[in-house]
Image 1 (spheres, rainbow, N blue to C red):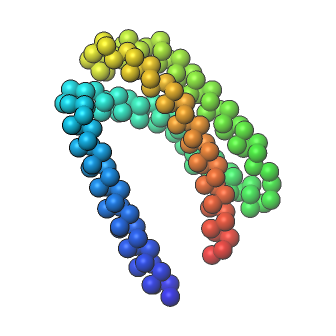
Image 2: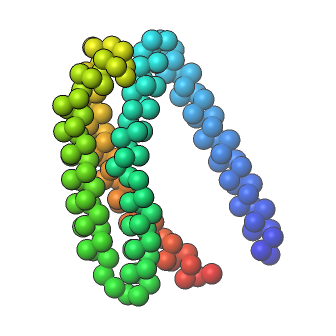
Image 3: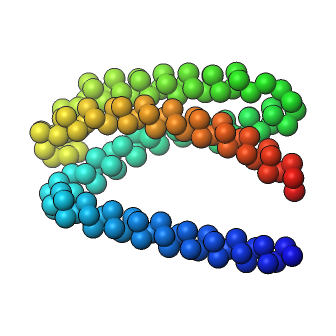
Length: 154
């Protein structure tokens, strides 16, 4: 019974992976047709810059939150303080990073994007940084509960 469940899960994962890759390819093709070569290049640079900022904000925090929530939840302790502290820490870090991005926006636009007209795009990265930071805290918090429940029924 266990072997059939593994094979069934593997097939589902394979199908979902192919489906997600097809969506990704169609998104890239559609985006390249709509934006053109230069705008797509700038979009990819902006996306890479955003990922760098997200790595700075989320480095290890998600794993720590998940571990702490699962640990406290298994001991029937409250996890609200973990969530509040992590959310506060991530909000402060993302706001500070947003302020740094505002001060260095001309530098980022000139030297990273090689286009001074991209200052507005740099400003648009700031809300994305804050939203992604908040969502990573929520995701890690609820993932900690999932780990606890899935290990409980094994």
